[in-house]
Length: 130
Image (cartoon, rainbow, N blue to C red; front, side, top):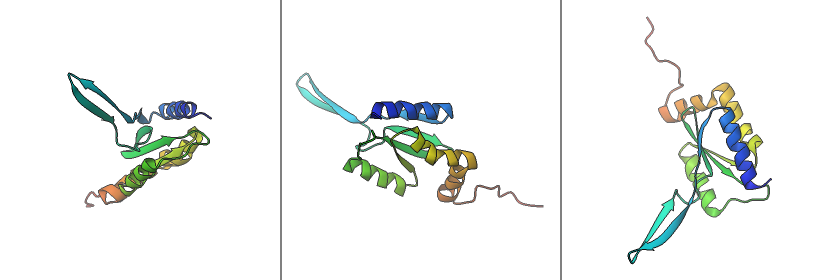
């Protein structure tokens, strides 16, 4: 499958499940104006193609064609994101995304993960008992 087809399929799956997401363009643009050079960077080098948020958890989805490989910058971004407790998915189709996110949506794993790792508690109410 071509990367563009996989990307569309994944975005359609995210839309179907009403998961907040957006396409992240990366790269840069340069030029000159009145004799001065300028450069604008779009996102951090190696940033994933699609950003999603599932129950407060940042999910980066890097989309590759069936024969595509991650760049060194993409592997660096993956390591940084995972160290920050985010989720990184290397996907070649929507099935790869569903394999990772589907269970999180069904059993509340993302909420539990955020509560335990980020907030430092089980996510259950800590109200005083009478």
